[in-house]
Length: 514
Image (cartoon, rainbow, N blue to C red; front, side, top):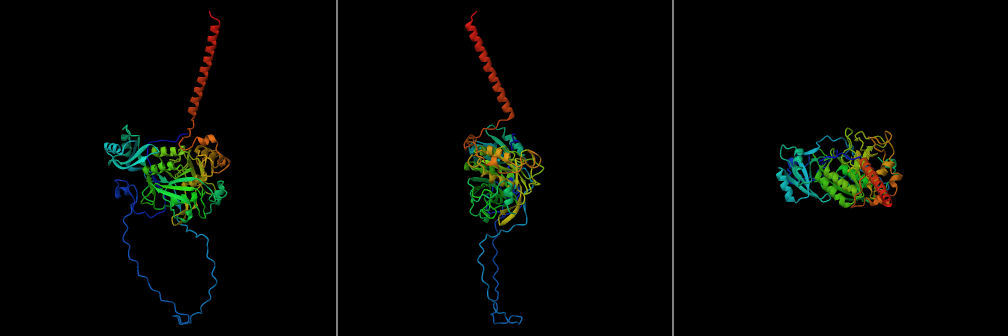
């Protein structure tokens, strides 16, 4: 079934509750002032004030000698013999668990950046600026998207102009590919043995998992003890790299090395940051940031991609890049969303992704999870103990369930070696343990994510070869396409039959002339 399409654009908005100190030196897009940044929620820190001098240390009088009298007039107690010291404790230090849980709920902010529009074309920068000027737009940023063969232009619309009106005006220009508004995305984001067992992961990976995972999220605290020794690299496409709770928690669920090992411990993790922190402590990123991150992700040829973000409307630019990532052989897991009053969000509802919803350790649905026919699978994502900057925290949301599934994908031959996302999706749906109403349902999809026989089976050579990087898998035929193919075959067969009859009659006439 095809996904709902529309010509819109996105920015990314995460509902992170943790207030992480903003990094100094935040880079704003060209032409954007501090006041304009604040209007769309981007926090630009003030210059730090000069540090005040430290107070002078106070002197503490030395203790009286053993033979002196105390201030009370009593004799000093004789010195006690010190007991033998215990050997040093070499166990890992327990990280503090913060009291306030990180719970990802429905997003109530605006859907688009109110004064911006995007347009895409394969033209020189000077021509693009001329197009913008002709339409009364101010160019803020120009970014090449080589994976799509276009250049992306971020522009400000004139005061009082509706972005959708600007889109319609731009699309009347035959020299550009397409235009779209700048929609906003948001992040969707105890011992784990029970959850591992629930999903068919009887034991952690033990560091033996190979392969590459790309996550597009908020910044990861790379120095966190829970990620010590992990194969982690990070590239920033947004305007800040200050560590965030959401990104750090996702990274630990994937490749954590501490007491809570990641489901894909030992794998290479590339964190592509496409977010900026708002004054409310949330993280957002514009379509240009996300598009640049996805454009780079395709060049990395990862086995798996974790997309724990969403928006309501279809984004043409981001959708094209995700489709190309899927066609290159990358298995993609996307969060279904954290809004029970809204259907599965974009990009989770795309055919190219596996939409993951969240359940607790009793296999009950997360109360804020999105519902709808595009839910594919359910995984643990409620009340997880996860690493965050400065310690640990209880986290809940479809984001974290998505990380359980995407990390597990590296154990599947379809993703690690076979590079066949279609085979991955079929296997996961086959192995799912039915939950809720019998069969597919709008709450749990196919059911509980389980690594079973189909998921661990080798991928046929023809399915693997069809999805090698550089070559797209053939799209599945719809019912209408199959019907047309059958009708065409029947017509061809009838034509062949009539031709045979005509030839036979002609031979008879030749053998018996009048």
